[in-house]
Image (tube, helix red, strand yellow):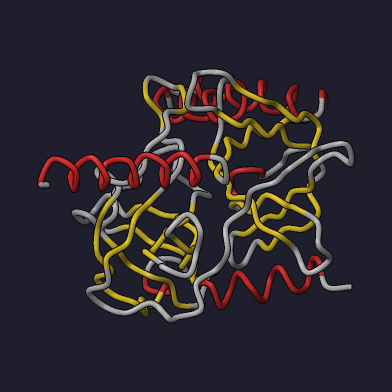
Length: 255
C-alpha cells in the first residue's frame, strides 16, 4: 500500500510538472541591425575603458545568448499571449519564443510582436503568430499572497549560458513579505511587490511564481511574475503581484 501511494504521488508530480512546462517558454529578444551595430560599438568602448566584466555581461545579454522566461496567458480577447518582463525584451525589435519539450525537442516561433510594455512595472506582452496553435496556458490565482505561504518558481534559469528547465523541488519557497515596498530599492518602481525565497537565477526573469490550487487541472495557479533578485541579501527574490499584472493585461487586450 505504501509503495502504491508513493508511485501515485510521483506520477502526480510528473504530470503536473509536464503540464506546467507546456505553459512556460524561453523568450529570446531579437534586435534590429541598427541596434546591434550600436550595441557592438558601445560594448567595445566599455571594454577599452577597462570595464571588462560589464562589457562581457552586456555582450552575453544583447549579442550572445541573452534570454528570459515567459508564461502563456489567455487575454480578455480570447487570444494566447506570452507575459514576461520588460527588461527581457528591452530594445528588441521582435521576440523569438521557444517551447522546450520534456523529450529534448523544441518548437520555435520567430519574429513575435511585442504588443505592449510597461517600464514602470517591468512588464511586457508578446503575441504569437496567427498560425500558432497554442492549447495550454496558466490561470491567475484568485487569492491574495500571504506571508508564510508556500510558493514555487518555474522557468529557464541559465546553466553555462543556456536555458535549463526548473520547477517543483528546487523552486519551492515561502512568501517572506507579501507587501514589500519596491521604492526602497528602485525609485522608479513605487508599487509594492512580493518578497519570497523560491529559487530564481539569471534567466528566471518573466517566469511565474505559483501556488498549489486544487481548482486548476495542473494543480497550480499564478500568484506573480518573478522579476528581481537582490544579491546583497540572502534568499531575497521579488515578484510582481497579480493585481498589477491584471491591470496591465486589461489595458493591452481588453476589447
